[in-house]
View 1 (cartoon, rainbow, N blue to C red):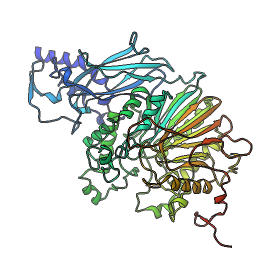
View 2: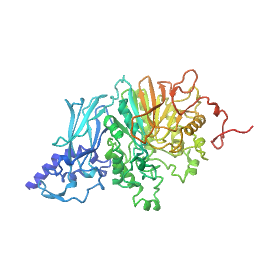
View 3: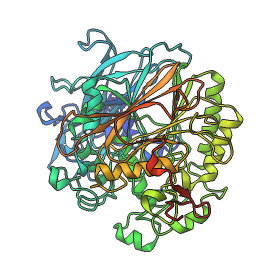
View 4: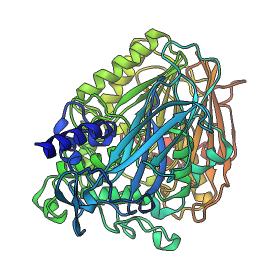
Length: 625
């Protein structure tokens, strides 16, 4: 009876520290069964931990994310090894130890690790605003994710973890809360926007440059944080000493944990996480190439794909990927209706609402999985096709209307793929002019979005996109439905800024020359009325500086990803003034911007004989009399 009472007291004492670690919970509040049984893990906790502080390390830095006006998520990993857990239960192969507090033999690897954390408004931690204790274990790959509360809006904070009862500390991190929804925001808010970091294609220099410049407040990541491929299948990691582990296509929970852990060894990625709070969503490669609600390019619920993938089903693979992503990224639990929801929004005072969509995993109708491209060319305009599913669509349109009604100056929409219509047949030579894996493959869904914007007169919209590994800047216009003048921007209801990749190769070819890239960009800007600037050559990112008066966008190119350095090239700058709903023009010129490379729309004489075939949708150079 005494032993049972002692065990009950021990479990009761530590249970709060377990629930404080969000990663023990389910990614979905409505699916508790997807979490880890805290009561079972707590029973493995004994008074004198077998881990000495010297055996434990903060193996993958620290991070913060999903900032609110009064709280923020803090993340780290405290582990006895840099390797990752191979299951969701335990790691075998350790000699059992006798735990006198429970009078049981317990595997050392099963013993939870105790971590303290604190957050302060000063780097010296003179005044602690919030603090706590959290346990972690092999069940969640030794990750720690806590919510720091009691914070003030629009305030910079510093945070740190340490192994309990020791001087073994993590680096000091910096984070920042967002304004309260009703706050009058007077200072500009600065964002860095990223997508598509591919480890074997080189170093993530783009992540580190805003740290070196200290140029932003928050990071927005639009997906493809990792890639699921093996080295050699997609990448040349041998040349850079950057082989993604495990070195094969990934399917299991261990695989996804190990792959994210490998990416989080890049020093510039670690620096970005340490210095800025992240707001992130996934694209396809966090799970698999060209995913949709029932499969991907490699997995289509067929017997062949099931056998090829070692017996891992489509649903199980997605759950493995989601579980690892939830463990390793500084994101909150979302009040979900299923286990894959990541769409959510953030209110930055009265300045802007940031709406983060999931146009990939949640409820997307079938996409281009390479063998069905011609079929998609026949059905891309079917009314039933959706990128988001009816539930997310309804939420998205309601959020846009509410944002406009509440008087936020801007609506910034983060999504994975290019929203604007892009006729790419010029550069690809394809028989079909559109990329059906983008919004172009879901015309009815795009029409419904435009209908919401135009019918409700919702202006000052800024769409963000990644995925394409290239840079695109367009006016936001419902072509064929509303008159549009490319020279003035009249008819537009906002802009789209789509950024290049951190390291993934150009869609025009990984070895493309700058001259060939420039020629292809010129074709594209000439062939697409709303496309004002385009660059295919540079890897990089862009920054947004948002005030009530205007949004300034600055695109940066990385000269090389082959070596780690802080070099970058200012590629282009654009401005959108509040109320203009298009890229700013002066003197009747095309979009005004300082452009160092790529193609800016406007009167290139070499393209004066460009002709459009309305039947095929393709463009060609006229050579006849």
